[in-house]
Image (tube, rainbow, N blue to C red):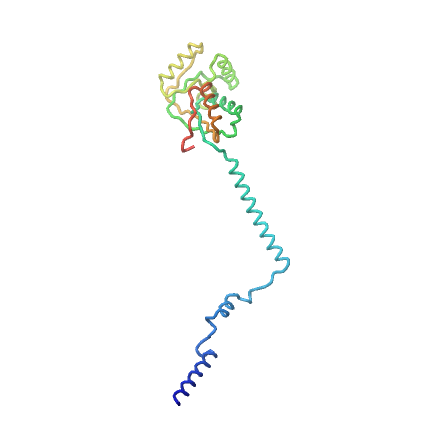
Length: 237
């Protein structure tokens, strides 16, 4: 009996000590205590009316900015040309290129067109000797066009400034044939550069064209630019 009494006494002492923190804070692992630690009540304060209005205004501004950004992205996407991309030629003649621009404007395709110009090494230039002034060179070009030579350009810089270019050829023999053709047409004095010169060529890309527009471009090229062709844009375009 005495053992039972001593056991109950020790149990009561242990319970008393646990309740009074002898064995550590018994609330440390319980939910109310953890919440008390997390909330940090000393840092919480109620916003004033002015502060609450500022928070609401910032939220509205952020929402409006996000909506405007989404609308701008949707508009830009809707304006992107839909459809295939085609390219026309490698134009060495500025006169031909100008004429193509005019035709694209008539077909209402100018806003879809862009140009890529690159250097082409190793071309022989057939040209007429330089005139004294730009005005004289342009007048000479006008006269030659009346003789049926549409593809002409005025050289505007370098040692051949104000000369009149009448063709560029990869092979010197082809350049000689061009000189002979000019002589048969009554145009004398044409010369060939002694060595191949760097020339520029331009290709025209038209994006977002439908099948009907492609057919129009093919017909235009066949009739007015027989040395060029319409083809799909390359992967680098």
